[in-house]
Structures are given as structure tokens and as C-alpha cells.
Length: 445
Image (cartoon, rainbow, N blue to C red):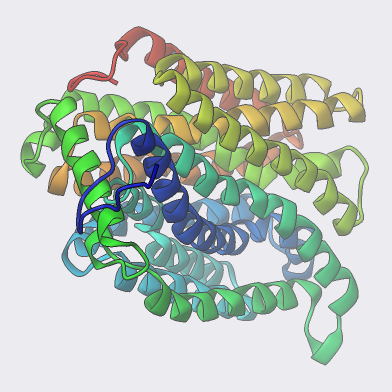
């Protein structure tokens, strides 16, 4: 039997429709996610490289742990002030120009970090890096809603955020190798070379963003007319199935569900920031002094976290369930932090294993969590709501490193700080299980 060709603009029906749909979204995924993931990988490398350079930078500049903790965390104050405006701008000018601006800005700032000599310079540039990067993650969250219906987003977002975890896989060994091999070259220290070498690729990637990304499916020359129509029809059905969702920015900001999600994500970010900015310090407490070795140990943990993010994204989409997938991941992360603090000073193997568990659990919670806001927000409200959640919750990224640095300076110990952050993270699971209802309808998560 000869197959009947599709009419122009038609979408295949029946059994063939599923295969056509899967092929279309696979095509979109291969086009968008690797590139977005690369940008996110570079962002995270530039964001967390201070966690590795501090192994020598503090001694060279004669700074305390408290100075480092404040500088590491002040990055998130930049997030706080500029994230909502960035996402509103994305709605107006599109993802391509917005992500280009963001990526070039943080890359230049990373390079400038090599010239810091005083705490004030350190604080200013870390704040500036946060201000530039603000809007990237919530911008991508919003951007993916233009391309995927809700039941396909967790998988796509899981692959995207896995790049953040992979930054530890790449960033740790890379920073350690640069510090060991280039220290003293051209009269610069190893940590100065880290900022230079890791900042330049971001600038180049930002330029490439303008030419590579497409703002909306309707503008995609790499999709056929049939594929464009399929995506648009799926998004329309998804919008109808989710029922009424808030479009008004002001009304969404008065919605108690938005503030509940801010509180939940605050607890998750506190743990994530702790692991990224103080994970290398915990490993050094075990007696490892070579930056390359420390980098490889942390890279193993973050590789496991990246795998976990991809797997839980697929699981959440398959089960169409967010509540338990997110809360169990959070519990796992909190347990890992608690055990790392308990075993510190007793068993290096158990501390490393606990760090792996903490990274995996905390990393897995992130892609599932970010599917919750879009259950009741859309349009401009989604742009502002997602950015508001991320900007306010990321204040935990300021508070957690500062807290750990202050506790370490005052007591000489990291364990008390790890215990506090574990307690904060477990609060996220309690809030999810107690206040997030089951189901996917509007008004539910």
C-alpha cells in the first residue's frame, strides 16, 4: 500500500502521530538543549570557580574564610536585584538577545576577577557577575515553555540543568590543573589564570548565541511546517488542559502559592550553594591538599548528580508526578549533608560518600521543582513569577556560604554549618509534602 503524503501544514493522526510527535520533539531537543546546556555549563564554571581558587587565593591575598564566604554569596544579591527585570526583557526582545547579553557579561566579569587585590574589589565583581547571570536559568525555564508541552518539560529541563552539575565534573579538574601548571607564568598566580582561561569561552559562546538560537517555534527555519503546527497544537491543548492559569503579574505576586514555592526553593538553594562553594573545602579537611585531586573527587560527585537529574526528569514526566519525586530527592540531599558533618574527622571514605549522596539528592530536586510554577502561571505572570522565585530563593546562595564561612572562622569547624544547612534542606521536603497538593490541574502542583 502506498502511503498518502501529508497535506501542507497537516499534522499526522493515529498511531503515526505518536512517532511523528516524538521525532519532532527529539529534533527540538537536539537543536536546543546541548547548546543551552553548554551555556549553563560555562555559567556554572565561572560561578563556582571561586570554590577551587580559594584553596590558594586566600593565602596569597591574606583573606579570611569570612571574606571568602561573603564574596562567594554576594553573587546572589546581583541575582536578587536583576533577575525579574531580565526575564521581563526576555519577554520583550526574545531569548536570543537576552541570553547573548547575559553570557558575554558574565564572561567579561570572570576575566576581570583575575585582577582583584582587595575584598571590596572581590565583592563588587562577584555582585556584578550575579547581576549579569541573573535571568539565565529562569529565562531558559520560560523559553522551554515556548517549545515543549508540560508533560515533556521535566525531561528537557533535567538534561539542561545536568550541565550545571557537570560543571563540577569539568570545572574542578580544570581549575586544579590550571593552578598547578600555570602558577607563576607571565608573573600571574594559578588562580589568576583560572579566571582568565575560564572566562574567555563564555564571551565567545555569548556571541555564538545570537546566531544560533531561535526565539519561537514559528521562527525556526530548521522545523518543517508540519512540525511547527504540531508544536503549536500541542501547546494549545496543554494550555486548555491546565485550565485557568494566572496571567496578571500583580495577582501572581499576591498568590500564596508563589511564596510557598519561594520558600521551598530557598531551602534547596541553601544546600546547593553549600555543596558548590564549600564542597572542595570539606574534601580538603580530609587531608587532600592537591587542587587537582580535590577537583577530581568533586567531579565524581557532580557527575553522579548530573546523571540523577536526567533520570529523575524522565521519571517525573513518565509518572506525571512532581510532589514525591521532589521531596524524596530533597530528603536524600539533606541526609547526605548530615552524614558528611557527622563523619568529618572520622572517616574520609564515608565523608566522600556522603557528599556524593548530598550532591545527587540536591541536584535531582531542582529539575522537578521547576515544573511546579508553570502549573498555575503563564504569560507575563510566568516570566515574572519564575524570576521572582529564583531571585528571592537565591538569597540562600548568599546566606549559606556566608554562614559557613562565619562558623568556620569562629569555630574552626565545618560540621556545625553542614548540620544547619541539612536542617534547612529538610524543611523543603516538609513544606512540599504538607502544602503541595497532588495532581496537575491549575492551582495544584
